[in-house]
Length: 291
Image 1 (cartoon, rainbow, N blue to C red):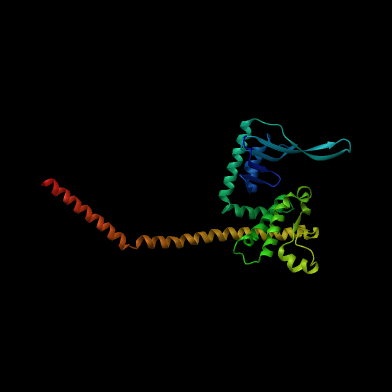
Image 2 (cartoon, rainbow, N blue to C red):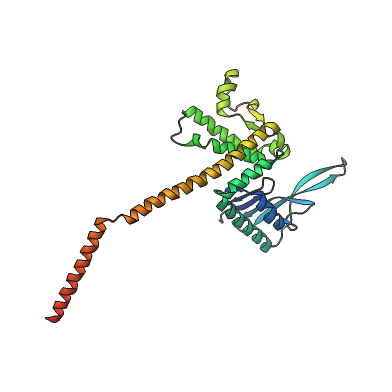
């Protein structure tokens, strides 16, 4: 029995994200506009039919979902309808997949340098609540709580369990109905800190994230403050990482130079011993030839 096909590459247009072998990467705005948008039009994306997702599998099959604005003649209203587009040539699909993989590796190579700066610029310029801004906020909250999942994290088992649940709910956030249809009203889970210091004081019998009122909308003003915080954090993190790495290189060069320039007596002794043994052997061989 043949193995079931596995998703290899996915382009998520709504969230502006490439996923390759299970690892997602957010696409910088410049790469999206300059490279991917021209590549999409007009085969995969057009003014009337907008590409939503493209998925390529390990058995060389693919699916592409699009969305179009159609009129419902019964109600005399217009609405967006999702559908699976007709198949195109295998060569075109393969070329598109290869371009996405190329983009994935390009983004990955920039993540520790200019991509962080690019994200900061992108995020600071976002003026409206969008799926992209919600996803970045979610990812930032996950990054801020990574430490809670380490084996030596200075928290007890109960608090660690709360953070694990909190992170799970953050990951599920993009699957919510609000995120898809009403992004501005997407609800975030309250943090364990807020629960223990505020919510639990007022509602001591309620378990953490067990009730609907523990999921709160982030209004535009709050997301704006959050956006500024993320932009500052990303810029500072990028600069700190670069400076720290450069400082480490300077110090390492000093250590390397000292090690190279400092003579090692044991190596010199070994070289002298080998040299003398070779002379003795050559002399012995020469005497043998003369006898």
